[in-house]
Image: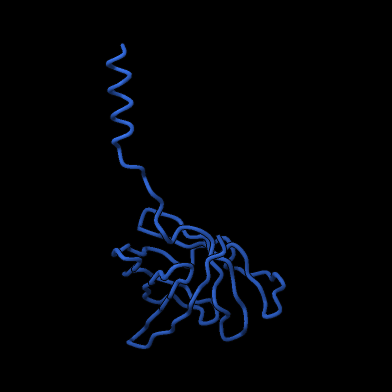
Length: 129
């Protein structure tokens, strides 16, 4: 019995801990062309890493209604290593369309870009938690 317990303890200690992806958490978007911004929660999903818009705010910081709250606005992001993500899609509310997207994590800043026909739009998002 002691050997069994010791073997289980060693196996547990030797097993690598499952680490969360570094981008997981709550992020504040950069204000769009209208001054509106949001809080996006990143988490794993079936297609990679996804981000759900939790709250929307107007240019004065007052929470405002949005049809996009509680929906995925970032999806299918594929981790490439070194804090980079590619081959995803992002919905840009003030444009009303989804764009091809990639992201680059730099500490508590997240560079997010969306591109269509070679024209790209970039923002820097800030980690809230």
